Length: 426
Ligand code: HAM
Image (tube, rainbow, N blue to C red; front, side):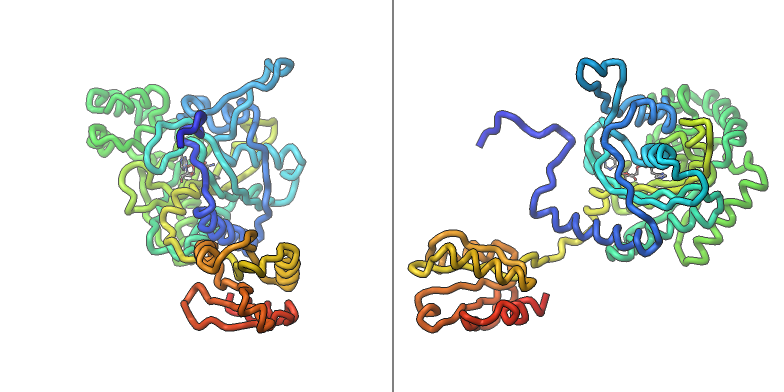
């Protein structure tokens, strides 16, 4: 078949067969967030462009190169909106707007699509999904540890804890970074010719981001660069030492990576990434996060502390084994001459009311055609009435999962009895 219109490139559909794995991930996230006292927040897809320009930073790739901008109808042409590229700024805006940052320490989580017009590669989409959490108004290292611990909990629930690695770094406070930025710029400018063209461009815009380069050409100049750690005050160093001690206390293995700088401007002190060491190249980051005290001050006349994380759901899903799942209990049909649509609908409704998950075979058919669709239905049992069952006052039940013996239910058995026999091994 040739469609005259295709989906938008970089924005894949999530098809029915894949949605089961999504549900597994979503359930694990929801359970972990609830277990830690986080409440769900849902913010709109569209935000004012200014929100991300001011918070994420005009010079970042996300804002300078990747934002989807749009304008609404004619009468609103003065304002530019954008499809949210990330969740943190939107969550802080929403909480501030609702007055929820005055007192209290909100802990919130979210899940949904984000949009970045990136160059397409495996693991990099233009519409992708994140789950994330934000912990506001708490400036203690233990808050960072809690957020990192939540990721560890989710990886544990998904059975992939052994496949991921945690990298952490201390970005210090803005004034410490300013002094460092000057020293770094001087060093890199002196070796400019050794940098890849993209890093030369980064050097002009934001020298710190050169540290995060994956260009082999730039590696020697970066390895010889001064280290941020030398520019940090004892206070900032003490803060980070407490984060590391907290991770040790929870038994969360980690590696300090002095080159981890993250691509968004709002971070200070702790930053971290959970990576997938098996994923080659750039797209190995599963989760990114860190502390962003000062973000609120970028968009308001007030400020608050904040720390959080967000995970790329597609990238995590790639790690999940495709567990076989049985999403239906029964595939139910009345065959051949027994096909009585009203009876089938009534029976299915009664069984569903008794708690079974029932899919109906809504057509007159022979046993072969019926069983073919039953097998592809993800139901654990095929239940049917043919001429023989009709004569015997029975409903035949054929287990589809393990190929065990066919058995019968009395046709007039109470729905609760059917539910007991067909639902118990769920
Ligand atoms: P981020 O590092 O930009 O951080 O994104 C977090 C995660 O989203 C990445 O680690 C990656 O798994 C996924 N991701 C990003 N871009 C793409 C893409 N184009 N295709 C597929 N997956 C992608 C943030 O967004 C911050 N808001 C995290 C945060 C929350 N910091 C504090 N609180």
